[in-house]
Length: 234
Image 1 (cartoon, one colour):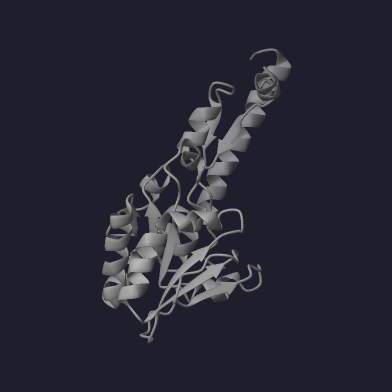
Image 2 (cartoon, one colour):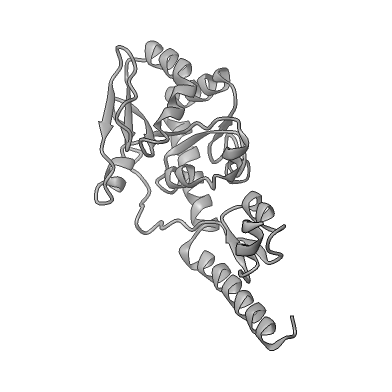
């Protein structure tokens, strides 16, 4: 009842994905999906020049670092089989792999992009739970903007964001994670091809200018809805 009372005062809702918009529609008919924009001027395309090590990275916060545990077996297999790997964890602090190099980097706005551009592959593990369907792919989209290949749990908005084998990889089981990561570690050409395609997809779909126009339409709709309500023509 409280939720309905609050939403009864709202003339429009802008949601970051269709799942959230559909969840809001029982409370507000004018619930519209406006996907989150990505600032590709702030995040440039990474340098694909060859280097000795392959960096598998994760960008997040201490509260979400625990999801790396979901794919620990895959990472352990990978790091045991390949000696040229590094793992960079930005914004976490606790995750470690036995006998493997894990570099922990504090998150700071000023250094986020510089550290992101060192990644070759970006991880986004999520639990297969209803809650994950509300995520809007921010982590994956940031990887993609930099030309970092996203490897993500196949759930929710990730299914709309990523085309497997073209702009990233969608996976479910530990075996899926292992297979996708093995392919990417083995081929710099594959990493570059998928990374460039991922960047192009983000520029095309999530530019600030394009999303701003969509958000303006939502705001214009809300104003018109409010005016009709105030004039008694609702």
